[in-house]
Image (cartoon, rainbow, N blue to C red; front, side, top):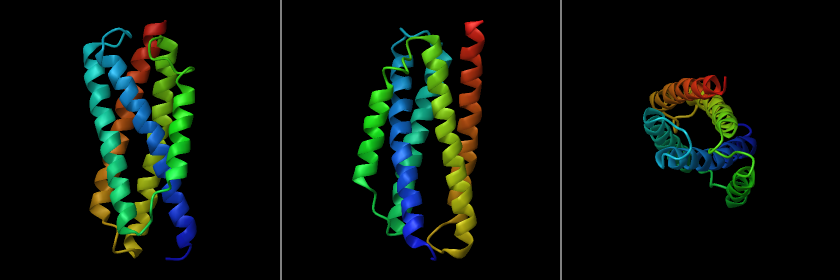
Length: 161
């Protein structure tokens, strides 16, 4: 494929971004489950499900990268993980404003993932290692995740007023 190096960098950058997203989603789900941060029971279940899906999407991206002979970059993933940890002080799920900002961060990450799956869907027509149906399923799930996160964000924002 033309631009293999740039394509590999593109995939590695998305994987790095997903590292922070998985961590944030899991932390939000854990905070929601403990019942002390003001999340409703249904919101806690929804966040736990979304966190599981985001982690599964990351695992699928790793499998796709493996099929494409693109090794993950430990440096980029470590950097993303450190960045997410540094952001924790600003993104406290225990405050409603912190939850609003966390939801916005997840929505942006999932929107980036949608763009990734759309791009890979287009590339799949010219690369047999990519399966269009698999990518379409991932794209549909990411769009559903974004809708659900936007609803949670809206509910949290509404509770501020």
